[in-house]
Image (cartoon, rainbow, N blue to C red; front, side):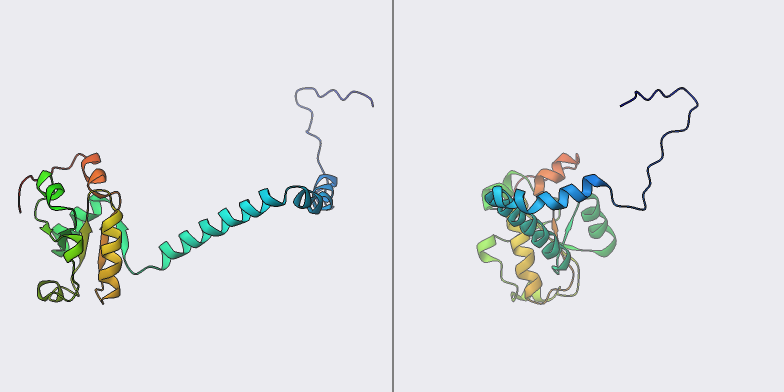
Length: 170
């Protein structure tokens, strides 16, 4: 094949996009062969893709929302949100967000008279890592609370944003 020499200022070769390229035609011809040769790999890829789609879909459709520390501050200051810390007793005394009420995860009862009063107010659930608070938020949401939030990342994200913690009992 003759060598193609392009000089500065020469127009770039233009490809005809009206017909499918030979490369894509070969790809789709060989795809069934690839799937047959690498069945376990393809199956694992499809399972991971399905799990990822499922996780994202459930995050979009749940009735409680994850919030960042800045949003938590805004909700507490503007909307008078109730801040509930579901950390263990020792963790709560070691450091908690000022103004939060401590309720141990095992004692969290959405039907409690103090919580029942705030069903229509914003409620923010916090814990050390964010795992227990997400579970508590789901529990409150399923009990009929309408504005439930949880601090994504827990107190680690709060301290990561250089926000202060109060120590001792509330």
